[in-house]
Length: 425
Image 1: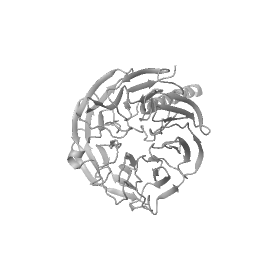
Image 2: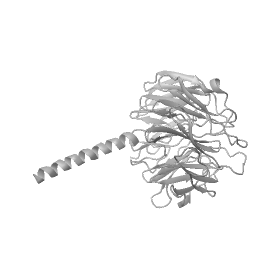
Image 3: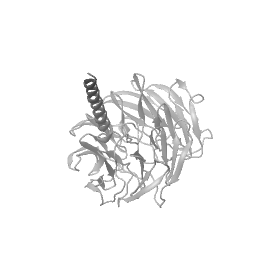
Image 4: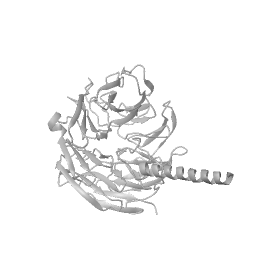
């Protein structure tokens, strides 16, 4: 009887282990549904990923793209989705994991970028495995099914007002249970708008306007959708405020300000926030400040929910990554800081190689390593298990602004001209 019981226990444990491995694989190894991944942290929970490669070495495949874009691919099981201009039109393209194009769908006429790191296709697509949603500099917002059929499209700038950002749009769409949501933050009427995922009908739209110094109301950040009990909330950073919105109607639940008490000009929000447990970690002050806001409460929580503030470190363009309670900051010049998310204290810091180019892509944390991309196409891999220890310098031989994507123990790297799939032999 004891032997039989032991055997049954072993089988059950094996089944649980296999189920857990499958779940982890489905969510992380095969699926990267949005710009910062399944947990919106810019990190992979499991997997073994390449440490060294070049534009030729350890390249499983590469495909030429039809035009310049800076968006990050989204992946769901056997399809890779990417936005790019096709004959100066906004488009979504799907590839399989062998690099073969499955389909290409044109949305509408596009609008080119004006910054050297800008393009018509800076925002990244998002998918739930049934639909893909994409936003473009032109204002085009579109919903497609996974076969590439265009279900609907609308132009936010034609409907709600022209884009007044100084530079190229960077905000990506996000998904709630029912809607695809866009945040538009600039000089003039700023807003949050939700659209029915299947029909594209406007479900709700709320204004999000704050009085700010010059350029302070401009934001290139992407919201984050979180579960709070049985409900969903949309956490937005921009215009010198963090706000939480009810996902059903967009109404503000709480707001936190105080991010620019001296009213400095040009403190534009470029790097997005990252959420670790119940803390919203916010980079601000053009890379000079970091703060954490405890989620929860109602109304103005500026005086009650600020967990910690740093005025000696931060990120301006690259959005921090987070994993296991740690926040990883890469500055524009390649300085790396690892913070304890709860306290804001520095755990360690170090430097990546400097060059004339800046670090603009947001970093990836995976497999005990940090992947940091410089705009000239150099991608640096460093161990972060015991401080920062450089492993390799990998030259893609073309500019890279998009963040690396970890799937199937491979890396997808979107350059200005090609999509690369990297796998170590």
